[in-house]
Image (spheres, rainbow, N blue to C red):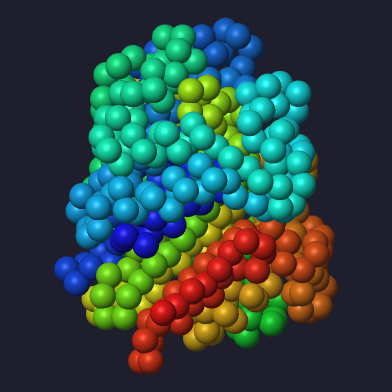
Length: 484
């Protein structure tokens, strides 16, 4: 746990285009007593008003430049909760490397430079500190306000952050959206993990408001079929259709009070609808997203599957000015449909893409795994799980293997809007048989470059008879797997 917190804090400094203290966090922890789950996703402010957004002309939650898309970030509450329950070193020790990176500076990664170059003029005004420093790969980026915020957390805990300079700035930006009680309310909740048997293991994830149930649901559906060799188009087709059977109704049924077990049972009851021969007209969510995933484990000990995110790029492209922390836009998961169970409203948690995973067998750890990728996370994790557990592939083989992803026609946020224009993206190093075979089954197929970020950044660690094996996704460019 010490390693997970320290690593996430360092990435929160160096990867602001992906995650940070202005975002949310979920974690699954494998212990000798079983798997426990932490939901540290933020809630909408007490001034949240869906009718006001509709009156302003919005038909969907705004993506950027709008404070309404910002929920109270849960990341820091998550660190504190994880540390209080499982940490061994002082929090000040765990945050020290991140503080040093923020104070002394760090070399801008290619991904940070690329993300900064795509920020529009309005966003550049808020993200001035980052975009004026991350102008070339290797340029030194310093974040003194972030260092101050981390020091405050190390010295004074969560209240020093939420009720300190950051919280004051968030309330000012919100202009009535947030009040002091919103910031006093702790976002981190220990919850029962959602679990299901598939591929010879028991898979665990976070229940609603997370979409993690789709990973389990897709595996339940696919596991009822005999999976072919992964090089065949039938293998890909069965998993694609399993993802659709599981996820086509996600926008209607996913909200914070949804019953995850009931959702899995509903998916199980319609598993027979999987079409083994043709592409279905159901859609499955596949939004783009920007997230960081990490996992840590010790031989015969604890393991952590942790995911943390800004939602989309630099998030809302709004920055809390005293700390320079950019704020996520996780509120984009809310609905503006009147009466929808996920309608934007005070104190509510939005439907969430973040969905870490753990696999066990007879109570023993098999794997911790997860990915970035927005709403495509269940599709990516379904493929990784099928390779790891059904096919018996090594972590390196499973992570490096080619993937598919369902996508919409235009934005990457429109996959499920109209299934008649949905298309299937195939990674460049996929077998040639995938193209012809899937096209013959009715899929609209296009091929993207090998190891393209469109297909997620997945990491996995697997426990075997020799200890632990792991693999970091080469698609991440800046990922790493380290053992000692």
